[in-house]
Image (cartoon, rainbow over all chains, first blue to last red; front, side, top):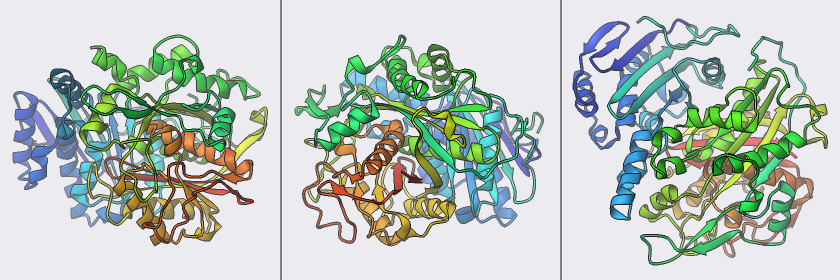
Length: 200
Length: 378
């Protein structure tokens, strides 16, 4: 697999194709805020999102900027594959804590208790109307993920594909995003199991 | 899962060996019979934090089979029906994938203080072991379109030649976790939900499990195929994470994608089984989308008035019931809808209707702005 662009975000390093964009450190909220500032994003809705959605939004931003720079039609010609292990786990725990503590629940928390909501936020920010798929996987790479990526890439009108691995639970977070273009990157090898390069 | 390359063939992809557990029955046939008889599986129950009872569709505990967690017994009951409907063992069938659709999986584990056990990949792995299925499933968790999307994904895997057969399963339980969430959104209906009715006022939650196999080999099914897969599509609203699009844009795109995939004009659709949650805005969005698509000729229903919104299972269980109904020559009434004059231009089924048509459009829409559609021939 040879993606056009590859971003990574974890504690201490936020990179695009190996180049350091920021060195976010501290607790997840602090680190995610630092990554947001490093991207000079001006998107007030970001601050209302849960951590999982913020993580997905942040790691996808650099590769989607590359896509725009290359003339990608994000609205019509882009698909998104999202992979995660914990999914909405952090918001799930928070929703249940509120439920137990108060006997009620918080709408602002509950709406983030689905693993695909980060993708939804991404599609809203970038106006992506193409197909998206959210799979729960044990790690970023698997044969099934590659198969799903190939199917999305073959969908009608799709020329660009963004694949995300984003996982956050408690203090641990890690995320990667790759961009595949109209003519490049996605192997047809039947035994391929890797979407994300092992080195930037 | 074996993934050795094999040239795609042109035989149609068929669905068969359905398994189904719903609040109305322990099999697809029982569920359909209850629906045909006009029964509603939604029952009032007290809800902590609410002065009024809420109507919920719960499966009969006696319908759940096997051991393990309740979620595994619910899913297992459907999967065992599928296994018994196959002429060969799923456990030894080569080049076979398994797709599992769910929104919250075994979220009861989180309610019991073990959030790590609620992680979907871990639950899926353990469930494979518990049910004696080979490998771990591809877990689709795409809100309320998960079940519909799982069928579309399965067909894509077969078309691409990655696999020859796919077991597609879907389930979700009606838990306090989910009920309390929809309750805080003021989304729960005051009585049983009434999809597409002029006075609809919200959703009812339910639980269900469903299971089916997709393949190009109809000989795999003891009782023959249930339906033929003709096409599928997806689309995003890119509008709001928890509110339906005002234009139905994502659903229009999903349906157009499914029709193009099936190489059919819109007037080839003879019946639409819609998402139809019973919320004012969802059903209104679907009305707009179906009108934009020119689907006025195809009678529309929703099954959520029978057994509630079963979340990640909804698309799969509803598709199975809808094609089963068409094979019986009937389109079921949209239970709860008695008057639908505020949704002009679409033909909401207020009564059961006989039909010779066999081409179904199944649609689903979910939080995050996702939409999916299938075209199936019964």
